[in-house]
Amino acid sequence: MPKTLPTTGKPSADVLADLRAMHGDDAKWKDGKTFSLVYYAGDEVSQLLKDAYGEFIAENGLSPVAFPSLRKMECEVVSIAASLFNGDADVAGTMTSGGTESIMMAVKAARDFAKKTRGITAPEMVVPCTIHPAFDKAAHYFGVKILHAKTRPDFRVDLEDMERLITPNTALIVGSAPPYPHGVIDPISDIAALATKKGVWCHVDACLGGFFLPFAEKLGRPIPPWDLRVPGVHSISADLHKYGYAAKGASVVLYRNGGLRRHQFFTWGGWNGGLYASPSFCGTRPGGAIAAAWAVMHHLGEAGYLARAKSVLASTEKLKAGINSTPGLRVLGEPHAGVFSFGSETLNVYELGDAMDARGWKLDRQMDPPALHCMVTPAHEKVADVFITDLKECAASLAAGHPAPEGSAAMYGMVGAIGDRTQVNEFLLDFLDGLFERV
Ligand SMILES: *Cc1c(COP(=O)(O)O)cnc(C)c1O
Image (tube, rainbow, N blue to C red; front, side, top):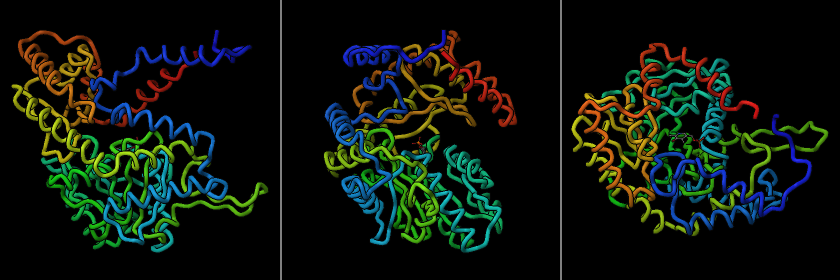
């Protein structure tokens, strides 16, 4: 019998108990055994996020006129981001629901800007092959042709390949600070200089690094230039719900000036329902996400972010050293922040991932080259040593010829053997169909 709406309701305490029981099979992020999806900054921060979100759970960021509180918070969050990214007073932006929306908005703004200023009607964008799929999604949604430039052996984008892919229809080119797969920041200064030379828009995807790199830099880490100090950068996406430690549903997209941002906005003055003006993709915008982001920034302050960045960097160094001292394993490239991946020339890393899964760890699998992925957060400080011990044992067991427990290795092996990855799309569509089957 498919699920239907219950005829009569249940007391809220019972419903909450049901909800809590459903956590049972979920990834155990709080104990540090998960390496993506959740950025946990401690119980006090979690409680503050809940309280702040709850305080504004009903308010709607679509109407800053009705809710001047949300307008003030959003403007302040954007201003704080602009100053962290070393922008001047002209910098303008908005909050969005996440990295994907920030990226979509930047792509749309660049597309519309290219149409208006250069008459481009068949827009294209050139991105590194390590770029987040949100750009492919934006290309798909907004009718922009996307061209992927290859990376160099150090995992940074190959500038010559980027330049080769630029045509008179190129609306924007992009670099990541850092890209998700290997965490090695693209040569943003060179990409922005190339954009300037070609007269195109340059976007920096700092969804991952935006609220981490400024603090790593303050801690004395050598961080290559990536922010608004780089001439030629037009826009930046940065996720508050990652290393900003905000509640889910919060990101910012910034532009060099308000004139560029105007191309993001949507307005419609001909509706029976009244004058409609929407800053970003979503119509209704959850006030809770805005309030929680504002709250965590004011709670942590620079000192709180610095302390967390320090913990992440220290755990990252420890993990990288442990991986590099494990026979057969090596960290790929020279990652700049708390995100990196590791591969092997001698072991099947997918089998290694399955062996680690069996011990309760959760590491994302990557392709080209096969690798396992680590996204380090403050939750990993207390488990870094156990992780290394488990990893060394699992690697040694595989090296000795013991079979790995069953997991996703067979599937990744199969996908890896397919040269044309577009063929995988049907398989992925079936996967989604299956996931969202009627229950
Ligand atoms: C997470 C991420 C995104 C997309 O952000 P969502 O919030 O998942 O939509 C984009 N770029 C990079 C580099 C990311 O890590």
